[in-house]
Length: 325
View 1 (cartoon, rainbow, N blue to C red):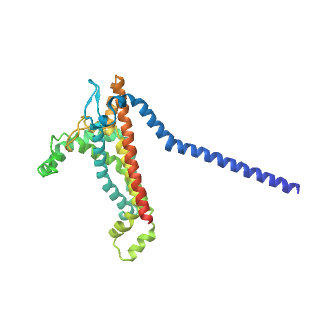
View 2: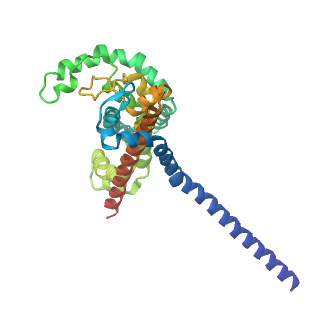
View 3: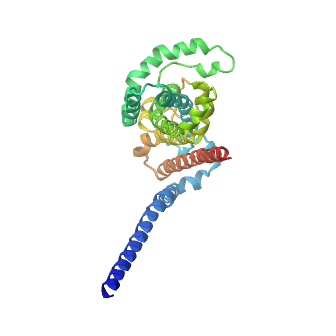
């Protein structure tokens, strides 16, 4: 009886110790989840607001966002040109990268021979490991001359005289412009989106595709009517990651944008973004209002990123809900 009682006591201690360890792990993991997901972003927002309060008090919100002037000499600062440049380059890069990424994912998962799949997948993933400054240098020294001397003159000659869209191809073809920047940005974000979409396609149950083939569907019909609808949320998730990468990119855009504080009216216009302005001017901010305005720009970038990613996440939830229904 004593041996049985001793064994029960030891078992009780083990259970109590396991329960305590489980509670400790839950608290530890819960703390870091809340810190990274909630407290840390909130802390960043508070710091940015504290540092930019001088510019907020002087320029307000509406005036600062709608003002296209950025003049450190007269201490008149506005974020319109930077915000517009950031949004235009991001949206154009996403519009180029999205169909290419989906096409790559379709090829890897549905069309490529078995021996070729790991080779293409590895090559695509290696692109994500290349530092952004390498993309910027490659774009400036290799792609820019090609765009300026061959691609952009051809585009201007072909589409420049067309109504409505002709204005998009007007201006000097320097290669340091919206089009080249967006093209390099799209190349940078393709590996992220292609990898996410590829993994989503691989999660489609094989029985669904086999059932479609059994009903007489062609390979393209299976891809279009089964694979893509089933993985719509995964495609949107890839867009989320790509949008975040494009919004925050600095070095590549610094090389290729031209750092011209103007609202681009053509694909061949030089422009600037929030990240380029921060990278180029933070060390030059010699007055309190100048530095505060740069922090104000940082806060706007933070909010723009948060809003765009929130919209994308909302779209993902809508797509998942629609698929479940």
